[in-house]
Amino acid sequence: MTANIPRRTVLRRAAFLAAGATLASPLFSTPGYAADGRPDPAALRASLRKAQARAAARKARVESGIKSRNGWTMEKVVDDRGNVYTRPVPGTPVDVQVRMGDVETVLVHVVHRFHYEIDALRKGDVVGWRTPDSVRRGLSESNQASGTALQIRPGSYPSGVRGGFYPLEELVIRDILADCEGVVRWGGDDRRTPDESLFSIDVAPSDPRLTEVADKIRHWTQTPGLGSGVLVDPLQPRRRASAKRLAAAQRA
Image (cartoon, rainbow, N blue to C red; front, side, top):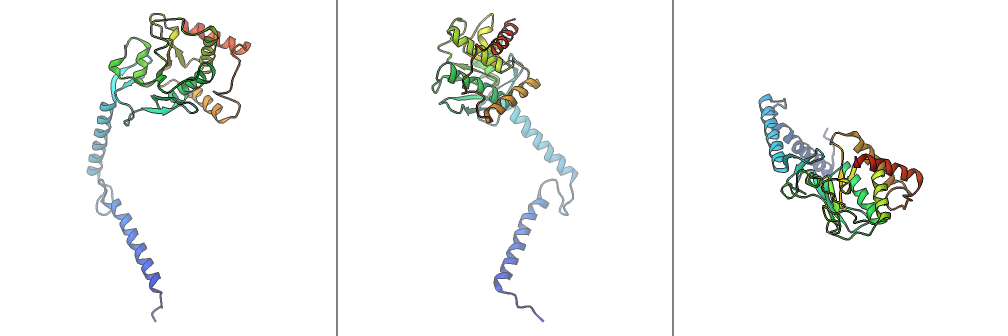
């Protein structure tokens, strides 16, 4: 006896089976798999070699092979599948080209506090990444080529010149650096060629302190009443003592 199945049901089942066959077919036709679905060692090795070649080509296109002063690799491109991208600084009109991840979190915090506590920034006031051939490799500005440093108003605080900030503004800078627990260095402390516009990551790529500070800043960002944008008193004794200790260490 034949069941009386509605035509709509039959069509739905047929469509479902056809879709299943369509989805399954790429699996068995993927390079590295034989017709019966078992791995093909030779094809898998060939696919791996192609992937490695693509990775090597990307690395050659992105990385310069040269370290910036702080030990990070300089990159030749920005916004092009490397590690350096143009990122907004929330709450400001500023964009900055900076290394993604923990570096971005920490340096954006520096820009935030500068904007809210020293002087409001305008678009174009912050210069992040620069090409490797545009920086002096022996100086801290080389860190910009690895996306791990930025300059705030470099035209107002030119390289080689000290005294660009008022005393109270420098107190805030010292407090910002204390927030960052030594993972950021101010170019104004460089002895040979000071650059008061420059703020650099001052730890190596593998240093866990960078992630610890970035995690702290992310926690502040997610917690009302904490983080940049919330005015603090840099003259508060505990904060001032911490800032003085860090300044002495970094100047030395």
